[in-house]
Image (cartoon, rainbow, N blue to C red; front, side):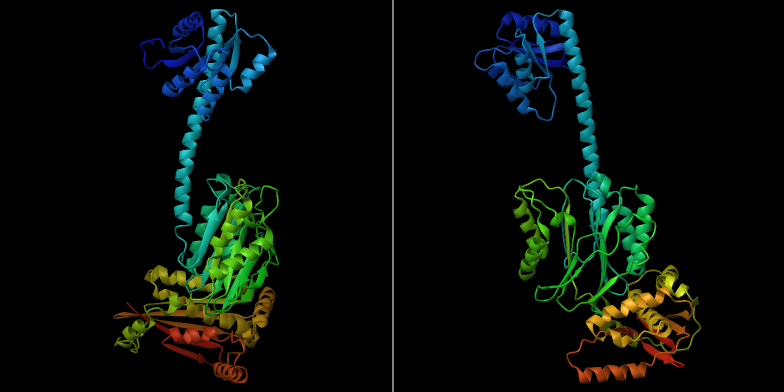
Length: 579
């Protein structure tokens, strides 16, 4: 090895040639181009010097002792797969085969002797220009990768870290790239229901995930305000259509699970079948897609509606993305529905559906590169009503100690709204009322009970007073789904009817009182007759599924007072809370 020139900032070149004279000539030419230069006389030593000094340029002879130039070039290139230290063969072999062998060995160019100093320097400048450009591109890629990793961390924090009940809901995702095009959301509704969404944007990577933040924010905000699942889906569809390019859309499966109604409301727009497993791990329902993906059209299709299913304690709802079913092994065979259903059933027995399914998919693929994102959400159908009843006894004790609870007083404020005709089908007044309450009185957990009372009483007035639906339809699992199908049909054709809603807020010394009045112009609701019918049904069929009347029972439980007035088409509930 020869001594190097003094400038420490100069680029470093490695000259490898078994001829000392050729090394000296090339070294002097490189020094004239402001290079520092290392020299050696065989391939093995060249590899060692390369590892030690990582030069910016390598000039390599072909025929040398110990290790020839081709072998040395292969080893040097294998040591730096992600960088471009140009390697030029300097040889007297003037043949096509020598050129081909040099390129296949990893050379970036070949210079055949004899050549003039001017040609040599021009070649060096040319190859170094390409190397500098490669370095700039590589630096830019590294900066972009760092930015992407930071963005992915922020998006994960915004989107998935805020999911509700992660200790009870099984969520698992395996991304095909740094950014996943799948999105998994869970949120608690004000009345104690659970909203769950699995979305799969077109493709995967950063481009496919840009719609995730507006989708997640809309889902969470509207869920928190008490909008229905269909209202949330409609708004998400509008947002995605307005924000995303035409070739980017989102397949979605949304579910609302209501413990106190013992029902699951499902909307599947382009995702594989959603599954409902019973307590024995058998498939109870497969809910296929009945709508195009969201973001394709400016509005939902005319026939868009929820599919409603009765669920029992220990039932589970499982949502999957198509990446699971379309995962391939080395023979090109897809994982498919049958393998998924078998793995899910095994997971049900072992208490870990997500883990069992993902283990089975990865075992099936045997390390084949993943082509799409894999996602699964496993939701239990029971236990969510605890959010409403927690602390109820302490609340009752606090309320009983309020001395001014039954004193007549003027309300601090009142809020009223009347809806008529088709507006009854198009407007949901409950989120509007809750928004007014929280804007005036601020947030608080006690408003969740208020939401449940208001929702039950309004839906009762609409369903039974205006739409004249018979609640006895809901006394069987099949009738429960039929009830909602008839409801949707009557809502679409609704042209007459009126519902008046009134809220009166009365502050108390250690809490507050809200009087909720709802009146409709229907035939009225016979509460006493309703309870007699319920008692009769229980007496004649102990094993009959009792799916109606639970809403009224909940309102009785949460209200201090509940009265049906006139002919039963006016109801007044008094809700009291303690600070």
